[in-house]
Image (cartoon, rainbow, N blue to C red):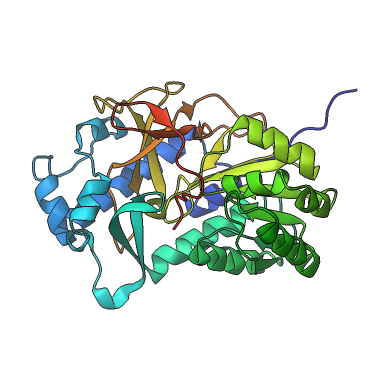
Length: 359
């Protein structure tokens, strides 16, 4: 007897609608055309409005880029650039910056950097969360969110209300916190009675290794969404076995507008927010653009963002693009699960527990 076909990622239809296309999914060629036009608009915007990019991109042709491949000739933006001073990046009047985020360059330590978002920028994130969460959330579901980033929990709650679900913020579960935080989590489970749990990998590690918390969850959840840090295959297996439900992984940074990509039912890489972000994988040492299948550093260019657009921002995250079709039937490229971050020596390391990319 053949297995039932996997449900297609809802992001395919969302992307088609965002790009003004008919049909259930854009083709890779349609996505490339859309992104090229969007990058040209972004480059034109930052050259006009951003003192940083006016200087940084001065050597590029006026009509840059001619093709997506031309992006290899564009200078990178680094976290150090944002740390030095965020103000030259701002492209909107300060009166239009609806949300300003201050965060550290790596996890919970290091110099601070700031990013600003207009109301339209925030709405784009809520729209992505809305459609991405339908991968494993249905109308009427309750979703317990215990991420340590209140703004992300707020945006998720807004997005969930649009699909007829309910998002509830729970108490924090800290890495290695033991029975005290686990007892509070059990009370949250009883209070919310969630079908979906959203948590950081370090929080999931604490919960699956606490017998009381694991018992409180077993058989009650339909899905877990891990977000905010690398999810190892071993921890994925532990959570699935302890909680008795599938685990989906999300990729996003504050610099990507919190959301970046989420796995479908196949759990074979992140389906990407291609209408709002252009992803590249580059060699961490040379900056050379790497082909699909090669592991390197994730670089991101924002598309359509008004507050603080970023061009070829180096995230430090280690991953690879997947070029072949997804088992769910999707034809668009995906991003492999992030394994960790590159250190100064080019080695892949996993950030300290409790460090979040989504502050």
